[in-house]
Length: 253
Image (tube, rainbow, N blue to C red; front, side):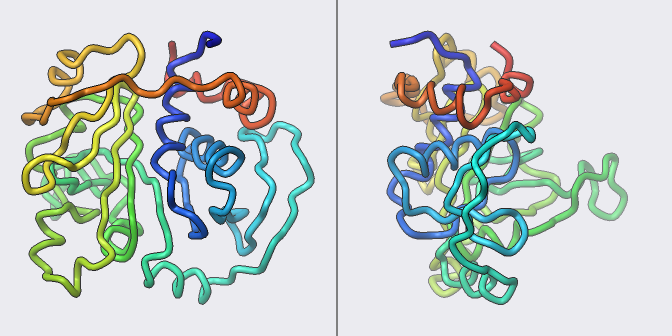
């Protein structure tokens, strides 16, 4: 096995979030989520659908950062009305960021402090409410810290399991927060009442380090080590998807 960077292992962990998705629309937001989704499509999930960010489904996977790549091949037109039909039927998996997230997956990207008089204004609610109620959502956190993994988020942008359950079967039928990948570990919601559970730690990271960087109690039974990239995956990442190693600027080491 070749040596790999933390960023490359994070890309593989993100790709694993999409394993088994099949022919659905995947919407990764940010460099590492884009790398992970494209890596999944080029290896074990060839049927997932990726857009050009405008109104077309493309079958080619371009490198990030504007590096030269293959000429995009358009598979189909996907206007807004088609996207919203897809979104509302559960046939999408988005990976978003989270400024704050709690043990049940409630996510905040709106503001820090009181919503009526915030200390820090962030992105706003954006598409988080609709995403989390209509289809599968995962999160990418590049800086795992107690300020991100909080006991209670200041504002709920994306719904966690407790709030989705309160809506009843009709309101929560498509709700799934699959995983949270950070620069330290992979987390799912397999704990009691869908509480966060530590699944694996990245190479060189200890369980104690993750626990110290989390403000609430994590379920830490049967924790493994995050899968290392294969040589084939490293070749794709380094030669095809991220030839300028942009991901290492987000996750050093």
